[in-house]
Structures are given as C-alpha cells and as structure tokens.
Image 1 (cartoon, rainbow, N blue to C red):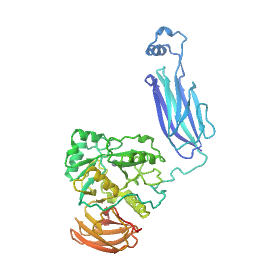
Image 2: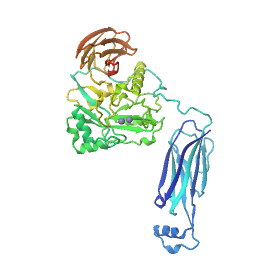
Image 3: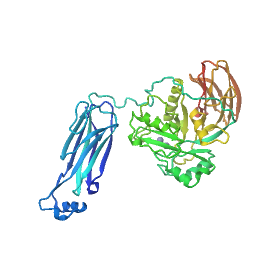
Image 4: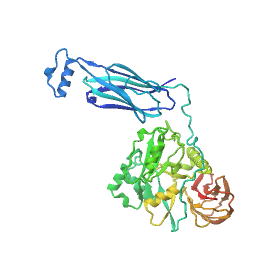
Length: 491
Ligand SMILES: [Zn+2]
Ligand SMILES: [Zn+2]
C-alpha cells in the first residue's frame, strides 16, 4: 500500500541561490520504504541575458560569456531520518526517483530501517542561475500491511499500569500552612489571546489571584515584557511558564528559571519522553493540558496523542480546562482517566487552568488553591504543585486533613487503625454535596441544606485505603470542586 506523505510544488528565484529548502515530514510507524520523486527545471539555462547577470553577480567579467555559453542550475536532495543522515545524491537530472528501504537504497543513500518520526528532506540550491526554477517534491511511504493509523485514540489508554509509587517524600510540613489562589494557564498577545500582558496582570489582581502563570504558546516573551515593566513586584506574583503547543498535544511547563525554547517541531508521537526528560532537568512542573479535547479540526493539536510508556516525567494532568470547566465533557473524560490512574497506584496530580484568553461575562471561574508555608517563594509553589498540595474550586473552600497533621499531597505512613478526617468547608450553598472518595470509590457523602460553612471530624476504619480525596457537587450535581489525594501507606 502506498501512502502519500507529502507533496509540494515549489518555485525558486535567484534569491534561493545557496539557500536550503527544508521539508520536515512525519513518517509513521511500520513503513517498509520511502520513495521520493523530485522534479525541477530548467536544468540548462541558455538565455544570454540571465547568464550575463549571473556572471556579474559572481563578480566576474561579462566577457566570459560567449554566444553559445550555457550554465546549469543545480538542486540536490539530502535526506536525514530522525536520528541520522541518510545521504544525498549530487547529480543533474530533471526527474529523480529516490528509494530507501531496509535492504537497498538509490545511489547516494543508505539502506536501513524506516524510522518513525520527522524526516528532513532538503533541497539545496547549489546553483540557481535562472530567474525562476520550478519543481515538485513528493514523498510516498510504502507499507506492507494495512495497519490502523489511529491505534491510540484514547489518551494514556495503552499505559502499562504498573503501580509505581512516585519516589516522593510526602512528609507533613511543620510550619503553618496557608492557602494561595493560583491561575496556572493563561495567554496574552504574545500568542493567540487579545489581552495584553498588562491587561491580564491587572485583571488577575482584580480577581485577587496570588500567583499567575503566563503560559503562551511556544514562547515566553511575555515574561520579558513583564520583567521590563517591573511586573514581578506587583500584588499578583508571576510564575514563569510556557505551553508547548505541538501537533499531537499541548503541555504546560511551569517554573523554568530562564527562557526554555526547545525545538518542538522535532517532536514525534513516539519521542516525547526524551524531551520531557530533558525539560525535567530544570526541575520544572509539567502538566498535560486538556488531554481529551476534541482536537483537530476544532482545536488544533489539542488532544493528547503522544505515546507514553509511563508518567515519570509528568507531574499533573489538567482535568479542568477553560471557563465553566464543570460542564465540559472532555474535562469529565480527563477526570475519569485521572481517577483510573490513581486507582492503579500512579500518584499524579490533577490540576485546573482557565486557558485564559479573554474575559467572558458570567463565567464560572475555577481557581487552583495551593497549600504553602507563609511568605512562600516560587520554589515553595512549585514543590507544593508537584506534591499535589492543591484543590480546584469554582466556589467552596475546602480544608481537609487526616489525623490533624496530614494535608493534601501528604502520605500517612504505615497506618492501620482509625483515621480521623477533619473537614472545614466555607462558601457553601443549599444543595451542595460533600463527598469523600478512596481509590475504590465513594465512602462518605453529605448534602447541605443552607448552611454557609461546615466543620466536622469524621472517624473511619482504615479499610485498606491507599488514598482519600474530596469532591463537591452543586445543586445541579455538577462537580464544582475537587482536591488532590492524601495518600495512605500500609507496609
Ligand atoms: Zn492548549
Ligand atoms: Zn492554552
């Protein structure tokens, strides 16, 4: 079966003399052969005016040009697979067919496995002497079996669900803990939002957000602007961030010390792990954004389609994205998948982000609330996020502890007896429901009739719980708040 991977008509004017035209084309899995059809013309230029101009451009004397003088335009093709140079064939021909497969290859190219990933096809303008050269470049893949192209349509579906505990110390903090309001996902005019950096920061201050992460698409230049305008010393504090926005998914990176710009255009579906690992060297906080978004053609590249063998380099999954997150089906899918990961022993945080591009009237805004020591630094915020010391809420304020000292994100070590859960809720409304979940499901529920706040100590037998977490629903049974878990370990 032949699959057309890429087709491009091109035109080169003299300005392309000694320039390279690079096509980076995705080559899928399981192809046995790559074929390149390359055509261009003219090869021989006979027009005396053009030839004279070319000679002068090169600083030579026009007298070198005789009536019968001709020159040849030379374009060549070089090919690199995702890891290696596969070769080039430097010759003059108007119509070229290059074939590369595991056993053999056209002269100038190396035979070998057709690796999945982005291949580079480079047309080099060794000599462009005509006014215009036109041509066509076509890449075709040959596959021996008709495999299903979309084998993984559900994000994380094929993960090996090994119950790998993150090797994290989840000790209770000694110092007093306070709650800070965060926005982890926002955009400015530095990417596709109409709001300026100043407008965004001002609005964040109006909303009493304590920490704001500006996460523009594939750039951090808004932070340079903020720095120049001294915006790092305002009431709202800024957290460095970026949203890597690729063809196969978006992920947020919080906390890089400097501008981190890696070449995301080289990311293919199977190679993301090495990039995440590299980013992690900077001790950043990595969140997979809106993994279950509908994706193309409605939201370009928004759905998570990367293959991951594990979630070692991922700190969180954004289970609430955009405004009114409680009403979105794709968020519900992400939330469900997060619960599935927890159930399988994978300690990963759930996060929320407004994906703030503009202000909508009457929107239900969800904020992230983070538990940090007094006088928190950017580092405290990042450490708390990594541990999942957060809850997300559209309204209710949640204080949830185990045995008085363990807060969200902690691990209660070696505990077999009775567990005291202290709960303190604020900003309640009639019809709200408070729920406690273990890894297996719902274990406690309480519906409110009109009280604004509620305080209770709930005593439970530790029934093999590996985690406990809270959800809250409103009158319409929509989820309006959730916490990350408190983990419980029994050796
Ligand atoms: Zn996004
Ligand atoms: Zn975004």
